[in-house]
Length: 297
Image 1 (cartoon, rainbow, N blue to C red):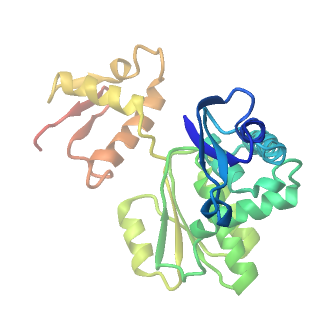
Image 2 (cartoon, rainbow, N blue to C red; image 1 turned 180 degrees about the vertical axis):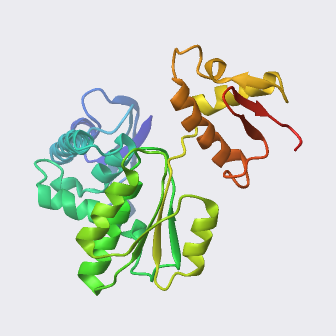
């Protein structure tokens, strides 16, 4: 509730001022005669004082237009933000990051944002995440789940180092599981003119690392956090520790793995739990039959 007092020469003038200022819904609380302001009051002149109240002050036309214009601009900016976020998500960008980039776009440039403006905004947002041109470590190891792009990333880094600085990085292939992994890296090495070394076991890898004369990019076998095959195989072996388990039992009765694939999966399991997979202590081979788990070798 807003209270205001108005002093005018007559009641009509005071009421007119109330309507213009507070609106036609204003409530007149009191009317009285008071001394006129200034010298006239000293001389005994009187004025009418009206006290009125209103729930809220009326908005001037200019202010009303400003509020409407601000509301329209806010709606336009919101729609522009949603449009930018949708475009970025359609390009494969994470939804939350797409919304952050859209909010970073200047509000007056969200509607009809061009590709160049979005590219500049994206560059500003990603600048803090970009690594500088630091020198390579003696060995850069690439790890991750299968299919993450480790081998391709190694090739890109080696190509950039060769093109920008003339540096030939050494490539090391230590992925003996994926079919064609060594051949793929060998093809990249031939194209780039980079030396390629293949490590089939820990001893060979140690020898390569000790004899390195240049930075090495090491490609490793994929390691999935949800390797169900290795987990199930270890579970079957641990049911009867010390006893021989036939290959057929480890293959799930032929439902998921054949006997040759069992051997490959056992090698993968050994690489996870054995210190020297070439001379296993825990998962031992029983020739012609299968494998056994030795808990305490």
